[in-house]
Image (cartoon, rainbow, N blue to C red; front, side, top):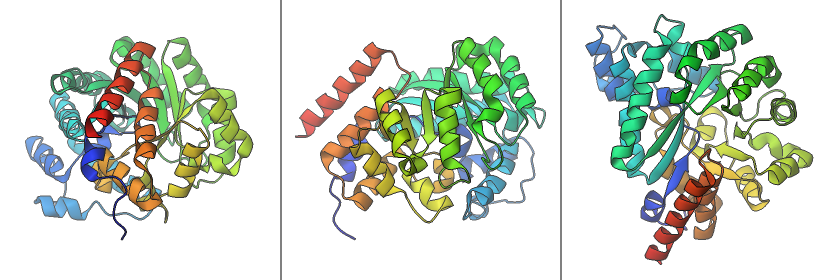
Length: 340
């Protein structure tokens, strides 16, 4: 392996914003076992090593088969708080100054957990993240393999707590679940003043049509993953013109496909698309956001200027106010100057 083009220390300290992070995907084996014992839940494992051995998969479907059952240990508001608090604490170590984090209420309400338990636990942790220098907001995601009616009911149930999340998203299994299926619920969310994003996972059947739908029909503010857009120069240009962020996750890409998609990410970056780097489900993929920066830099032989651009993109693609974006961009410049 060649020497890294940018030091791990520089990348760890570089101020950054994480825009593609599933809170349920930060459930480390140690916490999963702790919560199982706290709540008297038999998960079939009795040691951290046993739990870690179950975090094995080689495709998106295999990952989801591990991911959703693990959530059964999340029961009380304090459980959701503890999960998010652990992530925000870890993110601060990676130089994360802002997080807009996903959560999946249907994965919990479908097993009898009240939606207010989920939202309020996560929100308390987001507020407390400010204690260690992290600005945090929540994005309520709908599970696309549930019905559109379920998504609509979930949004209606969540609206009394609208001040506790900033936007809505769409995740889970994309097969036969195109963006247009959820047009009504996303239109309602937009009418309620919420921001919109949707997963367009890598190498899915109908990827380009799904990306077209999110841009032309749903009119999202951001796209999660989305690197298959390189197959359509017209859509790449549309992304560039609208300056719509892509929240890419190199290391998770390499788990669910045979490729990190480094070439596509770098081509889009150099084409002027607002590409960002994120960790997705770091407890399962074994890498938080700074490690994703490092892995991409090493794989694609990126320069320090490229990595600085990715960090700046992360703030520019966020849903911060213009003034707050500029504050963080100035912080990036100050950090770089101090490291020169």
